[in-house]
Image (cartoon, rainbow, N blue to C red):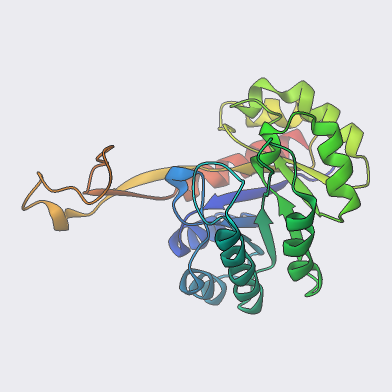
Length: 252
C-alpha cells in the first residue's frame, strides 16, 4: 500500500500549529467547527502561515445551514476566496448546490478559477454527501478540474460507508481525488484505510481546555439557545494526531 496522507481539520491558528507539530501532512483551516466549518479570518491564516509550513486549505463557506447561498453571500465568497489566496492559502475548500441539492456548476467554476489561476488546489467539500447522484457529481467536478472531493460516502460516519468510498475512488480513477472524512477515530482509522484503499484521510481530533475568565458569573451566556459552556474551548490533540499517523503507517 502506498503512503497515506493525513489531513487535519482545524478551527484556529493554534489548531494548525498543533497539527503541524504532530506531523499533519496538510490541514483544512476553518472557523466555527461547531457548525461544520465556516470561512476563517485572514488573521488566522496569516498567523498559521507564519508559524508553520504545512499546506493550508482554506474553507470558503459564509454561513451554516445548507449550501444554496444568496447572491450577496456568494459575492462574499468570491471576495473571501481572493483574499485567502492572496494571503497565502494553498487551496480553497467550498461547495455550492442548487435549491434541489445538485451541484451548481457556474458558481463552482467561478470560485475554482480563483485558486486555479494562482496555481492552487481546489476541494469540493461534504456538500457532495447530500447530492442525489454522486456519480453524476464526480463527473461534473472532474470536468470542472476540481482537485479532490471531501466525502463521508453519503453517511453520517465514514466508517459506515467504506464500501461506497471504495466505489467512489474506483469511479473517480485518475480524474479527481477522493478524500474520506467524518467520524474517523483512533479506533477505526486502520479499518477505514484498509477497507477504502484511500491514499489520504481527513480527521478532526480535539481536546478541551479551560478558560477561567468567565468564572465570576456562570449565569451569563454569549451564544444562542444551546448555551455552550463559556469556560471551555478546544484545540487539536497533537498526541492523537501522532498516534493516528502511526496507525496509518502500519496500514501502508
